[in-house]
Length: 114
Image (cartoon, rainbow, N blue to C red; front, top):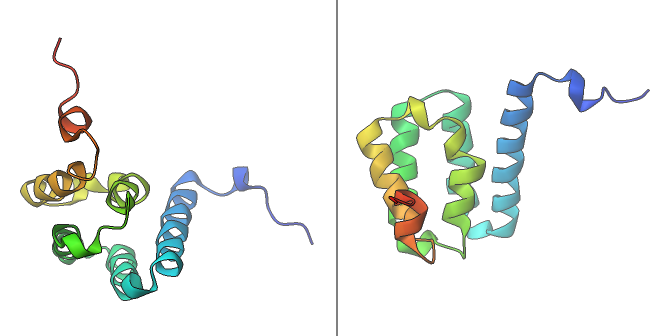
């Protein structure tokens, strides 16, 4: 039996599948961080925004968790999808840690002010 084309799956579900896939890929790429990535997904799935915010802040504030551009990818593939649900002050702190992963942190968050 043929699988339903992705166009028949609501975009909201495709987004959550993509986020779950991303986190699963990270657990495979970084087995030492698998528990942390799994916790992020569990908190997201349970819509525990306060706990998720705390867990994200703890994860990105620990420099030992940085693996190349994984903080940037975490933001783009996961955090950006629900950032409005997080405490905005805590979100700003998380975004700052992520911005420091960029080669030019000023350009990634401040943009051009011409």
